[in-house]
Amino acid sequence: MIVIVSELVQKLLPKLVFSIVRRAYIDIVLSCAKFRRWAKSFYYLGTSVECPFCGGHFRKFLPTGVLEREFWSSPEAQQLLAEEFVTVCNLQCPRCGSSERHRLACFYLQDNLRMKENQGARLLDVAPDAFVTKALFQTAEIDYVSIDLVRSNADYLMDITDLQFDDDSFDVIVCYHVLEHIKEDRQAMGELYRVLKPGGWAILQVPIWARETYEDDSIPREKFLKHYGHKDHVRTYGLDFKERLQSSGFQVNLDQYVRMLPEEVVNKIGLLLQEDISDSYTHLKLPT
Image: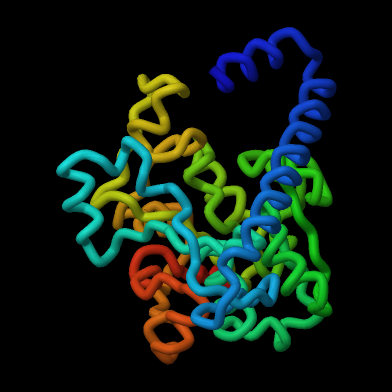
């Protein structure tokens, strides 16, 4: 119903007005969700787990609700969940709402990719995440640029499939859990490769929810949740995600970062032990 209303409003309103209204609606929804989590967090106060973003200490992290979706209810999906490569975030902070993917992004970028050694670098952040941006990019001495189609915290409103930047513009690109939302993902990968400087690096990460990437253009938007596991996902990526990136020119290095962390750290801050297998890729564009 929400999707139908959104499409109707989009047809009735001018493009610019619709964009403003949509951004305001998203901001209101996010604000209400943050207040509910803040109030609920007091019930879960404890010492077992710790959130590095809000600094909260709790008895446990909470389920995200992902596994309650129809997509995961079939026998085939249950078998898939038993596979080591599948990455489903299901540990949400009771206070700020951060999940495993937010915490991994911050730790991986800060520790393994040594952000401090890249001071002065120009960085493109696609669909800026409030958690990671505040914790990392606002304090690092980098030339930070962010883009998105609707988010109010982005520097520019811009389509990832048609980037308005010159070739070889950025030393670093962060495109984190974005491509699964993009219909023309190969075109987006090509654009990211185009604006990445020779010798630069990017982290391009997606959830891996299948053995092979699955997408069907005949599926209507209102059926995305059933077929792809998310109402805004246009496909489910598989282990062939690496080959997709390589076909766009990237050299792909699989990094088993989480497995190198002490077990107590992984459990304390709530990380997915297997996430490095499926989607922690670093991409290197070699000088021509």
